[in-house]
Image (cartoon, rainbow, N blue to C red; front, side, top):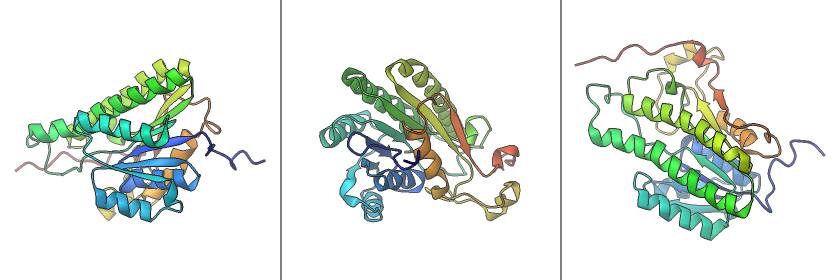
Length: 260
């Protein structure tokens, strides 16, 4: 039997993907149900969730959930719904993130925008991962968690709320991996480059900075995401960050922001 023929066990594996309505989260959620994994598609937009599930090869395996993860109560509602529908959640992907606006540089970003970015990326990610882990630990079951961070966890982006949230998530991955490894729960990061998806509209001219010569697409991330999530393929991998950027991180392409 090929090593790659059974990356997941549909009889035991279940998944929760936040930000599953569009972009990279959608591509990963579609990939999971395509592998036979029953998956909660969580997103802030009901319309996007319906469209994502409608595009699935196995819509019967997709469970919709709609809510704003900037609210702690919504995170708890998501956990309750996921456990009701799936039982233990063995695979967790945190891809949800508020939209970014180029105008929100250091001198312009307001408090609400700052707080929402951190609430969805960092606070929700920590709360969901910890509560999912507690249940897996009690059940003595392995797990695999994946956080979507960014190249800008280490490189300024002219969007301080975004870069600092992603930098904190990168450290959160390491903290969770170090603590949860003893319970056979792996935690890793996927680090996208310039991906034309999820509301990010990249200048096509950016491709000249990318060694592989093109902007990325959400589908470029899904194979790596599923490989890292799979306990069959990546059983000895935790606390790692996997960059999928076409080589963009080999350059530093962002200039200082233009200030009015």
